[in-house]
Structure formats: structure tokens, C-alpha cells
Image (cartoon, rainbow, N blue to C red; front, side, top):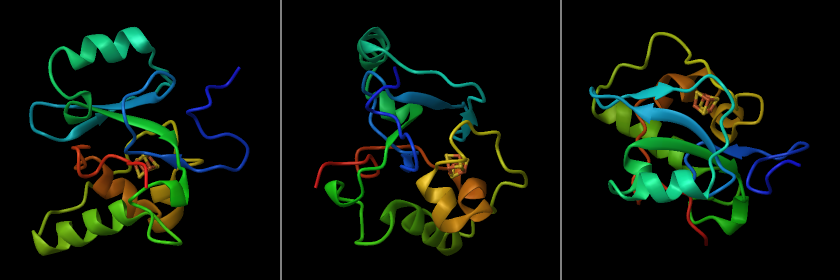
Length: 139
Ligand code: SF4
């Protein structure tokens, strides 16, 4: 059975979700600070969350995907996700070059950011480390 944490049937996925059992692990933060995507579908369980939490906040070292809950998240602006808009604006302000290639990604078909900003979102995505301010948060 699909996890209730993961988008199904036309729902969108949040690519900056919390580390909770049932979420997907979609990336690992590499030594250079960019995210190395995980191209295979990998659902995490409670043991993973416990283990990862022993070394600090998991969202600082990994990227997780969950179900986009739209208006139930503080990052929802009313009709879109504010996180990717902030990320793209920040990259322009700081003159960060977008990634050359689109990373391989297991959630592109349902990704909220991709549906909003297309390839621009993916080229920015590898620079996003989900810290507490960027984590999807209950509204
Ligand atoms: S923005 Fe692109 S690369 Fe990032 S999670 Fe969404 S579809 Fe995948």
C-alpha cells in the first residue's frame, strides 16, 4: 500500500519535506554542499529517521519528498509554493549559476516545484538544503 506521506493520483509532491517514516529519500547533501540526487525510489522508515537524527537534523544532510498539503503548509502562498520562488530569487540575487543539467529525479512527474517553474526549478534544486526555515511546516 502506498504511504499516506507520498503523493498519489494527481496530488503534488513536496520536494523539501520533513524526515518522517513513509517519506521518500530523494537526495544526499555532498561534501561540496550540493545535493546528490537519489535516482531510485527509496521510502524511509522509523529506523532510518532514528538513526539519521542521532547525527543532527536529518533535513540538513538529506532531502526528502512527501505529499504537498498546499494550504496546510506555512510555505503555501495561496496558489503556489513559496519556497522555490524564494530559492530562484535568492540565486539571482547571489549570482548563483543554475546547474547545467537536470538531475535525475524520482518525483519529477508529481513535483510541486517542477509543475510551478519547470526546468528552472530542477536546475536550482541541487542547491537546496532543507533547513528548518525551508522545511514544509504545518500552517
Ligand atoms: S525541482 Fe526538479 S529535481 Fe527537484 S525534486 Fe522537483 S522535479 Fe526533482
